[in-house]
Length: 134
Image (cartoon, rainbow, N blue to C red; front, top):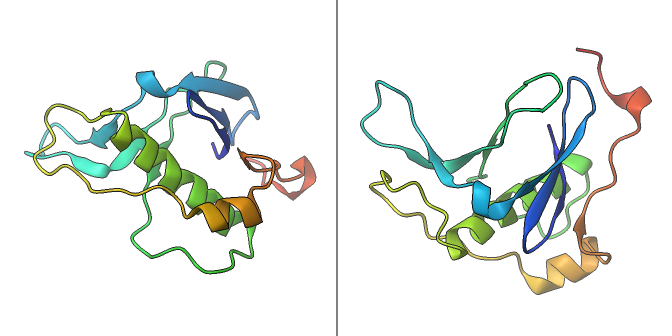
């Protein structure tokens, strides 16, 4: 389920399995995903709501690498959106209360946003014929 658009209020995701587009409010998301056996949560992970049609779930992991000066692929641009989603959630205080370490996150460089997202933080979906069947 790649994310295709990020606004100040919501994120648009598309299910990789059934192609259903879903908008989720940022106030419904939070940083921090753990397991029943882990004592701490991972603040670099966001769990997106399940697809309303097929119930597939996605977890978005913030990259550890600094952004490239000139993103060249769909994957590079998607990584920037994921990193900005994490920064937006941190700025809104959308952190799981059980997080022991609060991540320090910054917004994307405005020069990068202007150069690679001139119409806002949006990605054009890859053509369906390029997607691998499930």
